[in-house]
Length: 216
Ligand SMILES: N[C@@H](CCC(=O)N[C@@H](CS)C(=O)NCC(=O)O)C(=O)O
Image 1 (tube, rainbow, N blue to C red):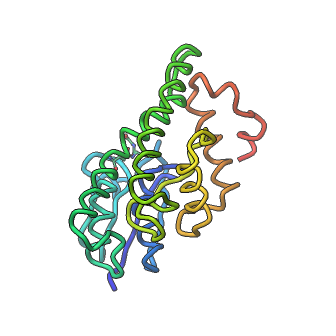
Image 2 (tube, rainbow, N blue to C red; image 1 turned 135 degrees about the vertical axis):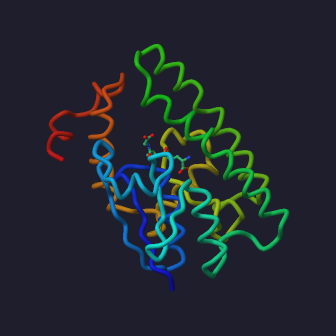
């Protein structure tokens, strides 16, 4: 088995795509978290766009871009998380490609500078939720994207506001119950995420508990 080093920032969502695939496959790897504000030279030398994740393989090759990393891991380490059927696999990949649009729509609230921007962003959240809810219904009704079996596409984390979307809510619950989803204990991650939100100094930062964030 190759030696894997996965380089990350503590609250980076994109890294989770690779980390979850490694954990689902039961592969040992070093998970190294670096400081986004002080990226070391060795990291800059292996990350063409200075972003995480980067996967270092056998201290010789480096891969960047979370989806390329995850696809590589799925192709090279059994068992495959993608469906065997090429058409089903293409449908899954189409939704994996949609994920950045989904994430941008959902996280826009956290980057809003004003209350008006925040409200406009929040009003858009149901749009991608409705699309995924419909996709889950057409894929057999859940709880996972390909019905009962966990696959490649299922590597996401809880986003909130799920009450009106029962399939999405059930999918989220099923994923949160899966140990591979978690790079940190959930309470620890929430604390780190709150601190990051506070530091970002956007509209929602004022609602993050300062004492709690400062204690981290
Ligand atoms: N498309 C990239 C996105 C990765 C990404 O945006 N990573 C963030 C952290 S979550 C990053 O490294 N940002 C640093 C920067 O933009 O300079 C992927 O999927 O790997």
